[in-house]
Image 1 (cartoon, rainbow, N blue to C red):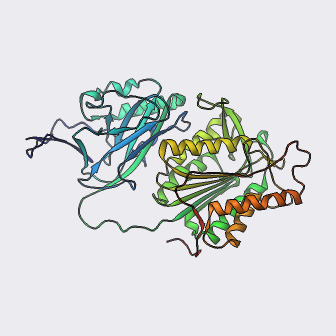
Image 2 (cartoon, rainbow, N blue to C red):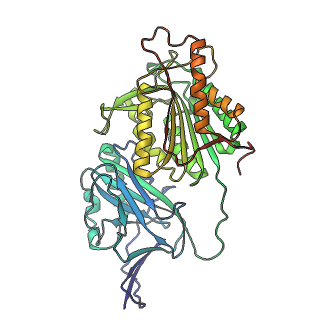
Image 3 (tube, rainbow, N blue to C red):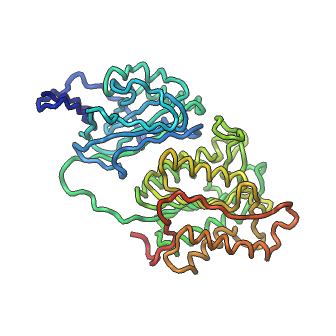
Length: 465
């Protein structure tokens, strides 16, 4: 019986034929391709994906020791040509799908592909060097000739030269509507020694209030958006047991597109881990832009405004529902809660389109990534949401803070939502809001794709461990 073995840096490829003898690759090992990004695969990330991809590994926490088995699975929201890149700790990259056992990389929508496939005796096992690595899936409407030219179908894995990665990054940047992408970050370490001590689940919050707009063509300043974000931040630190280090506030000139993206895709993934709960509160303007893809039934993408939203670059400077959904995929294994108030300066929260879009994105993220998401919006998609001009904040943060303060602990997001929805009609009636708006009504909505109730205010509001 024989056992054949190939070793690339960071990855041991093991094919069992039922024996003990081994053969180690030497001078024929693939050359490395340098990747100088802080997070492997950054240059290949699509900022405006027209559809969603998902890639996952067999360990939910992404932590592996030397010799442990690694397997990969992925799924596409639509039919696509799919390629899987493994970015390793020594800055090399190898293409592991398609491969000699899985030559057809034309994948059908919602079809889950496993690498290696179930009946394949081939195994991936972790080897040196160790550090932060990533499995990245790239999907395209058409075959990617740059990667097809590597003849990956002839072997189990093939090195991807640095210039090929650079050309691929330029192609994706030039035609973002043709590609979708996702990655799973993993951390590898030598075998032996004690495992890192387990950490109790924690809570983290990002509060965004777009009270200022650099361009007046998108509407007036909305001071209530800043006050609303500040109130939610205060509620999280006072009642949810979060420390200042577990929260981030973006308001005024800080609420830019780049800062929003960095907080969602860099800060939150770096401070949180699977099992934690992440809250995003947003208050600001909403709008619509033409969709890049036919995935939107009405041909429009809903967008959230940012301070630096630019009419000549709305897609890059605003935050579309598709873009937000892709950001959420950077937080696998977390419970995610979105609390959304989209408004304009005239005193009416125009959440009609955004409410439906966000609930739909939550469902898409759950379907493609099995993400545990809860989305609270100020109203149904076909309704208006109001706030009183004499009130310093919007009704949602006001009533959520009150629920966290007054309800018996622990307070779940679901319980706070019920409190908010029950109290809101009296506030609307007291302020005579909706008068003069034909058919005006407001019913806050909740989409709950979490497996268990999500704790908003714990029994003891000491800082979470």
